[in-house]
Every structure is written in C-alpha cells, then in structure tokens.
Amino acid sequence: MGFSLGVIGGGGSILAVPLLLYFVGVTDPHIAIGTSALAVSINAFVNLAGHWRAGTVHWPSAAVFAAVGVVGATLGSTAGKALDGKKLLLVFAVVMIAAAIAMLRPRSTGAWQPRALDRRRVIRLAEFGGATGFASGFFGIGGGFLIVPGIVLATGMPILNAIGSSLFSVAVFGLATAANYAASGLVAWTVAGEFIAGGAIGGVLGTRAAMILAPKKRLLAWVFAGVVSSVGAYMLVSGITAMLAA
View 1 (tube, rainbow, N blue to C red):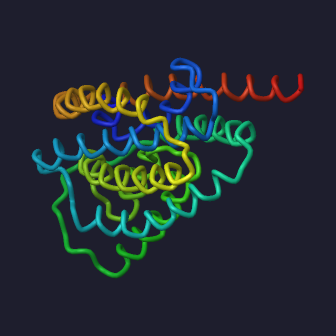
View 2 (cartoon, rainbow, N blue to C red; view 1 turned 90 degrees about the horizontal axis):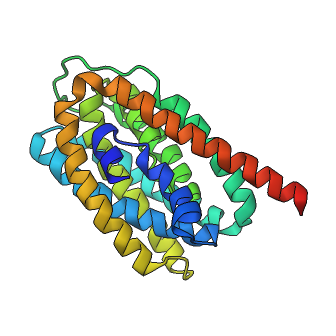
C-alpha cells in the first residue's frame, strides 16, 4: 500500500480494506475501514515528506483541496458507519473497479510552473475536494485515484506534482475518517500499527521509485489497475453470492 501511494499517488489505499478482510482476517467491514483509514493517513504523511523534499508539492492547491475535502470526509465517514457492512462492501467493490479504470486515464506530464491560484481554480479545487473527501470518508480509502485527476483538471499541473500535492489530502481525509470511526470504537489499533510500519517502509521506497520510474508510470498504472479490478471483481462476486445464499 505504501509503495503504491509513493509511486502513483493511489491504488494501494483502496486495497487496504480487502487486504484486512481477506488476508489479515478482520471480520467486521467497519473495523477494516476505520483501521485502514488510519494506516492510509499515516503512510500518506510519510510519503508526503518525501515529495515535499523533492519539491513536487504545490501547497496552495493542496491546502484548498484538503480544507474543503476534510468536511466531506467527516460527512462521508458518518454516512458509511450507518450503512450495513455487507452492503457497504458491495458498493466498495464497484468503486474499486471504477478506480482501476480511472487510474488508466492519460495524464499530463509536461513542464509546468507553479502559479498563484485564481478564483476559478480555487472554486474547482473546492468542488473536487468536497466530492472526493466524501467518497474517501464513506469508503475509508485514501482517494488518491480521485484526488490526482481532480487536481490535474483544476490546475493543469503534471502527474508528478499532482501526486505530491494529493498526498496531503489523502493524509487529512484519512485522519478525519479514522477519528470518526475511532469515536465509535471501530479501529483495531494493534493491526493499524503493524500496517503503518510496513506501509512506511514501502512509502519511502515508493517515493524514490517515483522519481526513477517516471517514464514507466503508464506500465505501473496498468499493473496496479489490473490488481485493483481483480480484487474488486472478487469482492463483488463473493458479496452477491453470500447475499443469495442467505
């Protein structure tokens, strides 16, 4: 998860919930979402530090996006807690498949110079931030696969700068979601700690790889998209089968 966040600014965080459910063995979908949100948040902060040092973070854009999005994340996580866990996983599986498709969209890689935000860009960042924050909170995901294209569309910045800037929102959204779930006792703290430790190592390696593998970003996106869509399809079939058998 951490490696994926560092390399392409998304992909890994949406795998956190199915990894906790089907690999680690967490049985409650809401606990898996709350725990993954905390792990994603901390890992995103670690990756953000690396991109900050590399100079790929455009802080004005990141701040506007996150400020509005954190409100959406709080509202989304409240709505997610109120939905039945099995139904939430079915919707989550559909979102995973949509995320895989979104990860394959071509993105700008050309030269870009940081510019002061005008009124139009601020409004667009706020719109994308609010919508993405809600989705992030509702599903307990980092939302990098939504945030990165949102920032690109709002500002015109290339992928590497959008990835660096998106990590601030991923971290803030995850923290808001985790705090909401933790207030309801829906965070497995020991599991979260282990997840964070592994993700931090992967994040450091991923951030370094992002600088080296920039020309091969499309290949990486295809690989991660294939993994995400496959897991999403498995969750969707499993969920539908379980509901029919009940």
